[in-house]
Amino acid sequence: MNKPKVSVVLGLQWGDEGKGKILDVMASEADWVLRAQGGNNAGHTVEIGSEKYVLHLVPSGILRSKVSCLIAGGAVVDPGGLIREIEGLTQRGIQTRSRLFLASQAHLVLPVHRAVDRGFEKKRGRSRIGTTGRGIGPAYSDKMARIGLRAGELALPPGELAKRLRERVEAHNRAARVQGWEKISATGTIREMARAAKFLRPYLTDGVSVAHRAVAAGKRILIEGAQGTFLDVDHGTYPFVTSSHCTAGGACTGTGVPPTAIRRVVGVLKAYTTRVGGGPFVTEDGTLGHLLHGMGREFGSTTGRARRCGWFDAVLVRRAVQLNGVTEMAMTNLDGLDGLEKIPVCIGYRLRNKVLREPPVEVSDWEKCRPVYRMFEGWCEPTTEARQWGDLPKKARTYLSAIKELVGAPLGIISVGAGREQTFRHG
Ligand code: GDP
Ligand code: IMO
Ligand code: MG
Image 1 (cartoon, rainbow, N blue to C red):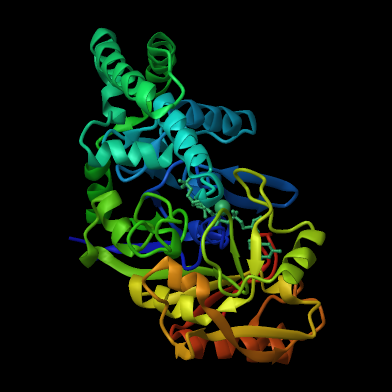
Image 2 (tube, protein in one colour; image 1 turned 30 degrees about the vertical axis):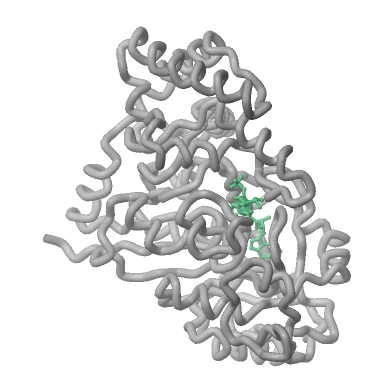
């Protein structure tokens, strides 16, 4: 058997670290990209020259014509959303047939799930999670409750698919009466899924066999994570998280690729921190947010919401490095800090007169933590033209080297702009 060549690429913060960009760059030397988890709550941006693509479910390798892509079984798929994405790519000249595959094991996101997502958020009021409204949590809940429908069921005889959908929608409507959720039309859902079935059937495959054949053939595989470590349902700022496993373990369960096949874990992170939606954020800083938004940066790729912004949090990233077994980091958006004279980095959390070096367990404690900062001198010059380590201003190199030490992982890739060419390896 060939030696496995599998790398995992995932986010080390709260999502939107620039995974799409880094995956696209890495995909120039890949055969397969497998999307492990999440749904169309994700928005992965790839900029190629003046063209900008935002991918939600389709793996970021799709823009490299020699790369094959699989939406693996750990993902949840809104059929309508996927079809719109495929059609959008086709219109732009990106072919998906015979190189995009959808695992039959992936669970379906149905209109009932979006209704429940909206219902729960409304009920939570001011303490809402700020979900993307894509029905992700309810779809994963159905999976865990063992009442979900899987993508493979789209290949059932139409009558059988209709029967299963009707049962699911009717159960929703009975619960909706009690819970105050919107009711959903069973006929509407059946019609929508029948159309989706026709369109998506040629893409369906056994995701695990596809992944294993690629591993056994020694293909170069990238496993694409969505969201980020602190949105992981187990390791994030629960309950302000998504409903899947965004950490390295999720890459294995989501694709069926075993941990022993993984050679490399690339943790993508920003030179500062952002988060969308509710939940604790120790280093949040309105002034930095104002500055970045003023530059037209940090608006969500999926919902267009302004992202909350803050300073680099080494407490958070150190934990992310441990959780994921990061073998190298890919640091993006260094250029976002170009104009600043002073740059704080959080090295501890102050909670009730103690300084924590590790994040607390309870969100109520997390919300009370105050940052302990170490100050760095800004470089106050553009980094966007840098193409190698030596091109960076000395103070930027000092900043990056300190972060590497603080979080305990090597720095492999540096990104100084959204373009493919604005990326280089460290050293
Ligand atoms: P993802 O969800 O992790 O793929 O990240 P998003 O695509 O949601 O958000 C990252 C944003 O940063 C996108 O608009 C990217 O085009 C952009 N980006 C990525 N790397 C860099 C960088 O080094 N500099 C700049 N200026 N933008 C970047
Ligand atoms: P990518 O892959 C940033 C956030 C939402 C919300 C929480 C739960 O582009 O990095 P959900 O709809 O998943 O139930 O929302 O998670 N969230 C993301 N934030 N990037 C993402 O994906 C996200 N996907 C979900 O804003 O706070
Ligand atoms: Mg994103």
